Length: 334
Image (tube, rainbow, N blue to C red; front, side, top):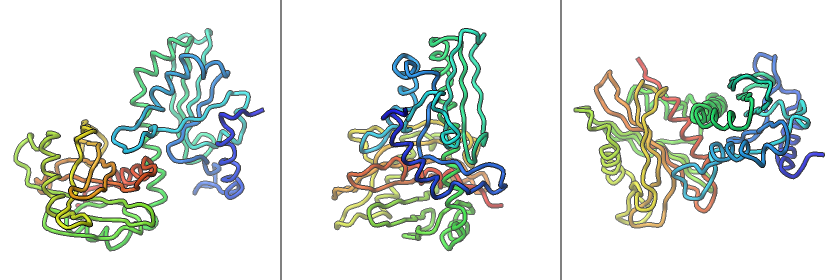
């Protein structure tokens, strides 16, 4: 009997199956994957593993809080079951982490599979001789594995957005910055100035926005977090007003210090990611943001893509993941 730990996931999966059980991927070779955004289904040898160091280590890495959100949310929602319950239904899940621990295994092995039982699908399979070997391997490789799941989530989101991305906004972006970005319908141009563009989506209960800022590149100091944030704040103050008189958008660093890191695999080989919170000076509005700063070698311009979400008193992780996916779709236009 399936316990409470996966009851919610099971109900959701059955609902999806009722609507798309016959749907195949575009090649007709694999059934369409099921599951929620930012969710990983963990498959274990037995229930005891979830309660001991194996499960604790999985939760410590994949279930830790995502940095820079107003309300605590894990980077991934985790559900788990044992291999005894791992039926064909669950094999269609979009993100799977499969764990096998057996003394007969000589050394830990980590394998990655895509679209094995469904499409799109990301599977990580970890085999270890004992619990400690598993823990050591996960500690060493957790960030790489997390990025694999993140990349798979971005690709799935973009596959949904792409069919409606040929619109006026993408044309204006291409004309102003010679950049291509997958911007779905619903986003509109809020403001365009030399070296600045503000693109927004205003839904009933939330807002999403993308801000593009460019400045002539002079030296590497412009890639420091302090320089990126100061440049962002100058443009936000000048071009992004709040609803109240004399109010304007700014990075909010009083309680959550913006976190910067170098990343690869963006539009350029080198980019700086910053996560944190924004606020409106002179008003009571705030939310999370993620930005990416890189050099456009064609124009010698340093460009910052600043994506934000406003969804007061509600969860924001998945809305921010959507904006992040849009920013990651950025490409240079010849």
